[in-house]
Image 1: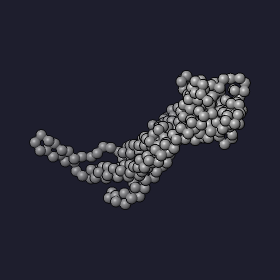
Image 2: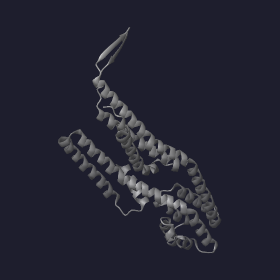
Image 3: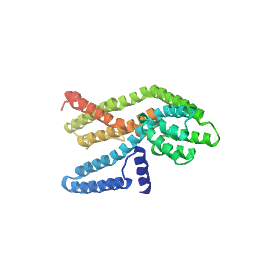
Length: 310
């Protein structure tokens, strides 16, 4: 529980929300208790199906707030990384013009650089009240979950400690970060075809296969009900033709479950290919699930139903 509370505090800070982390955790726990109570009641009223439905709703309700925290934190980090080279160049230009470091930081905290501007203002205020430039720069990545920003600040602090000139150091870092971002975009463009292939295979290919397999299984089960039970024996080998004791609803829901699992892992894989982070692919999950079920329904109940013989 302590690690979970620390995680919530960290991501609330990354999102720059004015929310008490303890109240957030209490709300999540209260929601879980209430939904579990409803699931028990639903079990006695509607059976196992009602209980499972409530538990699924509970899982979705628990996941969504955490996913929103991660999504907003990653979005703020992405915006920061895009603006970081321009901010460093602006600070460097102010320093070259003879402006004091604290004033150079505050002057560079423009509204269009949000959320980075807020942290730069905090760093400038630290310098104004007499903090060291190393400690002031350490304030900048505290509320932004960006590895590039952290590494950049580490390099700046290391350069200042070793006596380097801050203005050219910021200029060189800006050029390196810009080159890194352009390289990322090139790589993302090259792997876009792989991500598109995965999404098409999951969103269109898999529901066609599942619907066809389900149609074939249903046809075979209905066919065995009208065939007589026979046993063939050839030597020690015996073959028995009888009924298949698997319900159609089981196969249907089994196919739906497999499609949902495929969509989850597919979206995670797309996020890993595109951005190097699995969690970023979750945003594709609603689209993939909707596309899968739409294709599955259309193929199973519109196209294949026309070929049904029973």
